[in-house]
Image (cartoon, rainbow, N blue to C red; front, side, top):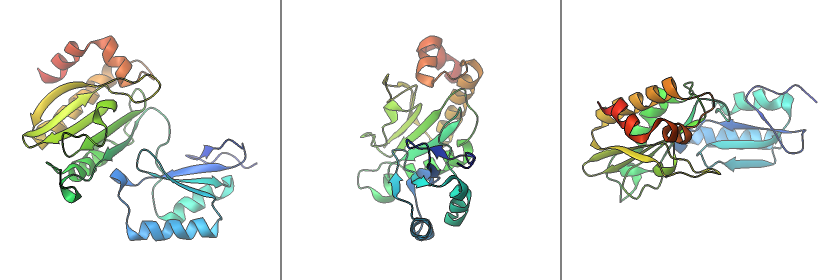
Amino acid sequence: MAENPQGAILQRDKQTYAIVLRSPVGLLSADNLENIAKVVRKYNIPTVKITSAQRMALVGIKAEEAEQIRSETGMEMALASGPAIHYVQACPGTTLCAYGKQDSLGLALELEKLFVNNPMPAKTKISVSGCPMNCAEGYVRDIGIFASKEGWTLVFGGNSGGRPRIGDVIATNLTRKELIALVIKCLAIYQANAKTRERSYRFIERFGVEEFKKAVLE
């Protein structure tokens, strides 16, 4: 079998691989879709999966073809594992949704450019919702953000995995500028004080919610 290609994920059969393609905040262009369709047919890829992180996974490919397939899609390889910020998930917000109160897609794209792939103590996920219904599930993300008419709410330390945790509200009614500055502070405190591979939900339980708020707000 060929050497494991960088960024590809070995599958259950121990013979084929998957690659995950970046589709920032779940947005795809016509070119993206056409290129994906072309490579799926050309390389006889058996499975195309939209992941829970709003990314595209091409599953069941040969190791020696992984990089060529990625190149022909014209898309970047997404980070599938490792201690870094993996993605920003977002709902349609005011761009498309009748219930949207703020521009969640615009904010999420800005956060994607600022933070995705930045090193962190452990895997870190960000979500942005355009209204209080929180369709992007901010309370169970490391950094969760949702909007109201008054501004943005920031949640930290949520998790949806095997040990679920509802994140803590750090601040409410923030402007976009205030929110981004606070996200930077939250990530900096987490990065400076967390143990290696310590997810944000474990970190804030150990560090203390009130101590964390004090560190980022004062």
